[in-house]
Length: 441
Image (cartoon, rainbow, N blue to C red):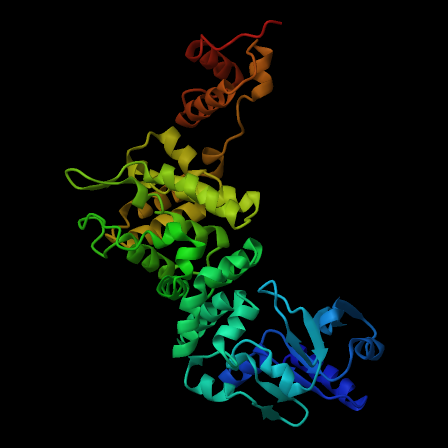
């Protein structure tokens, strides 16, 4: 038995010995029925928040208006919530009214039957008021009660239904699925931050390809990520992409991911979103500059979903740079070293590998880059820079956008082996950039 389970049982025992009812609830019971070791444990109880706080030495009141208190034990935290019923979800996310109730009423306010099971760890008794155990056995996602009511109470449940269906590879029950389709247009009533968190969980889950497919089938993808929905039926040249349209290609890449970062997962999802707006058919199907167009679109999406500045930068860089691999074997040594020393290059290389596997299957450029990474030392790939902006100012140049071009040219010449010292670098600048603007001082 895990330490967290023992601690959770001790909380139930303390509450029970004090005269309260206390039970495991939600995901931990679902996982137990599925035969999976729960990662955390939530407890529902008849005890009021103030009674819970009196029974335990360390507590944090995270939502007393909803009857929720965190109990802290040995560095772990356990959510202890008073049995309650809810009503009046005017914002489509949170209840307007909360009333403390009994265990059955508490279950009936929850989202899906698989998450509505109760378990008494002291008597080893499963309590099932809503047929959750049967739905687990039959691999079904079903709302508790009327699906339209459940989804209108909290529009985030529209996405949670998809996430659970994909995570467990369960079918969505017919009326529940129909309600998702009917109410998909209301999902944007949920804050962008909450949508982003749910999207992250989907993409980092075991079946992100199935998640995106279900979102498309229900209309949720068109509402949240219309740029990705547009990939469906966007054709590709068969000699490079025998797998089919851009949507199929993207799903195959998602399916092949192995424990990605969220930046890589988003990079995979968005890497070809520039193809629909750049599609032309001349001698063959073409997507001129789709990586550049896609990078701008990806930046807008990340801002819309409230990704951090650092995350957005990495995702945009993955989208903008994914076509550079095509010319890697023809690059001069200096440019190749610069390319291989790109920040977070491991994610760029992995996106390229996935891109190839989900299309023509040719990994020769991937293997070329890997061999060069082994061939070059870190000193060869990232030697100390010979010049900086201060050096350019010292020789009389006026600071401005030209500095980045100059320093990039110096860096490439250094990596080529054409220059090896500060003096050689300064001579290179004077000869290569004779027209650079001079400071008036």
